[in-house]
Amino acid sequence: MKRIVILISGRGSNMQSVVEACASEGWPAEVSAVISNRADASGLAWAQARGIHTAVLDHKAFADREAFDAELATLIDSHQPDLVVLAGFMRILTPGFVRHYEGRLLNVHPSLLPAFPGLHTHRRAIEAGCKLAGATVHFVTAELDHGPIVAQAAVPVLPEDDEQALAARVLVQEHRLYPLAVGWFVRDELDITDGRVHHRSGAAQLLR
Ligand code: GAR
Image (tube, rainbow, N blue to C red; front, side, top):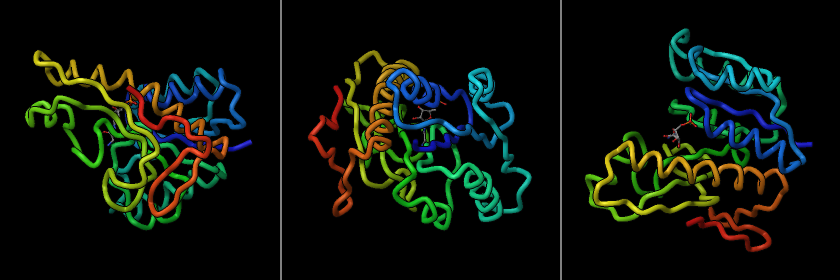
């Protein structure tokens, strides 16, 4: 049984999609804890209602990123996770933290990386005149929104799209993509060679 710890900062809809897939698909895994850096993250109540252990670690109570990340790692490690899933966890992580979880730290980002790392991805895609947008699940490295790509989902950018419309279309795909990628991880179906991730049985790593 693999143990998963999920980190959120807000709504937690990606966290929900992973928790639900874990239960409904019978993964050899359990979500051991959901941790937020914000006490008002609405996803916490959802996780609590499902009987999942939750915790809050307020980053504002720490002098710097190193101190917060050290305490966060202690909290995460108390659950002995095989995998840490970032699900809308809106914090820049220190290199030491990322190194500690190398190969077992996944993130979902709402763009087709390496395009548009950082914030306001949908606005930037529209402003750039992109015709294609999407989401990426990747292993986390020290560089922000960077690292070996596990899977991507692509959606069209329509002429009438505003930021909200595009975000909603991408989010639907995030909710397919993240459970797929996490399911592959917990079933040991992924191979990383030369910084590239392959599904061992050749499952499609691009969703459309
Ligand atoms: C999601 O769209 C996720 O891709 C994004 O935040 C949203 C969280 O929504 N993450 C990032 O931008 C990380 N760089 P959720 O709380 O409902 O899952």
